[in-house]
Picture 1 (cartoon, rainbow, N blue to C red):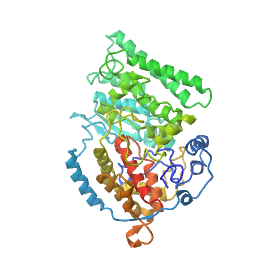
Picture 2 (cartoon, helix red, strand yellow):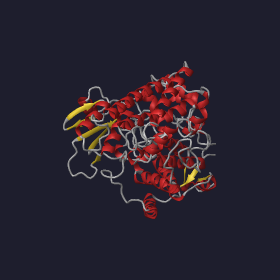
Picture 3 (cartoon, rainbow, N blue to C red):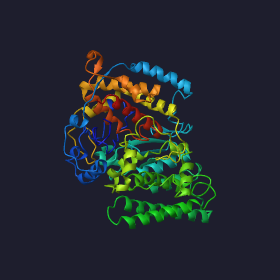
Picture 4 (cartoon, rainbow, N blue to C red):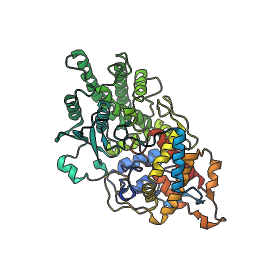
Length: 525
């Protein structure tokens, strides 16, 4: 039996806003719904968004499925031997491998490359930041992303406070006291509050002219006029994308409109000599387009079966994506297809799938039996999910192991929600369950399983035969084993909630998901 979401394992539909690998154990609070292996319709039956949930269920399973007991869905699961190294030994191995790979001893969150984990960015300045940014805690919001990109490209010192999106529960009272609408992003500049992303971006250009101007000067009227034209084109693209993405009627007309606007974008990208909209370097139009082109590439493949990138249909757009992925600013902020296709419905409502998209959706979701299993295919600008920098598997596995080992107590408790108790505080988003409780009695077993995963990440476990050494059967000494059922639910729950860039960069996230599946495969009966 494969660990296939939507079939025998926990629900695989939407992501949590909780940062799995950056919270201390005492403060790990999830905004996800613990489903314990129930079907989507079952786990979300009390929610108002039942229509979109059923749509997702039909897409994933191809048919409606009756409520079933989690263990019945899961099938037989073996116990496993607690033979993995201790967390302290794993930490020592991690450090040895870091030195061997010549990776930095620590990440400079304030001055180093762009990262989703920084709460303060100074870029080497000794002056206290004048600016505070409020963005969403999961790095899902496209309007937050373009402001975030602008700050990083201009290297304006700032502090950050992360606020949950409303679809995952009430916003903090301290934030709504400042911003009654609760909208994100928001910015405090010299104590003055600015909301709406466009107004924030204009203010940043106006107030910080010495930090890499991103809009052509008014003294260059032709270039400035073209930049403003491009910003209007971005809004046209946004409308045509959402019209096709969310509609289940008049498909061909909506598709034609979307394709025509995408071709217009591609044509504009061919006007200047360089790969960007206005030439050899990024400008404000690139930063405004980036969050939506990123989401378009993910969602149109997943829901409509159309590859936007890497197929040569829009060659200037391919060149633009490749150029953006050379920039540390963008690489530190960009998400992956899996995160985007599941973070969009809570923000914009139901997305309408076409039958021809099913194979792509299965590959992105990891339910095809191969894309989230070892050995992983290499990444490139023409892979199913294009990633121009490619991957470095040894480095990527180390990054995943580093996050897991360094935060193992918090991650263990989070994963154990998969075998714990559902919360009593329902919220709007289908997989949100902020008051869920972990299965305390299974924490040792979950921790042992995660030690096996961390050990595999550090030692390149690439075959099912090697994984088989983890499993044990009932004839062996049970004093050295843990039961597998609760662990299976827990690790599958964790696997389905790894978010990019919130938890890990894309290449490292796919390594973690695949190694969690490596362990799940090993305990399947």
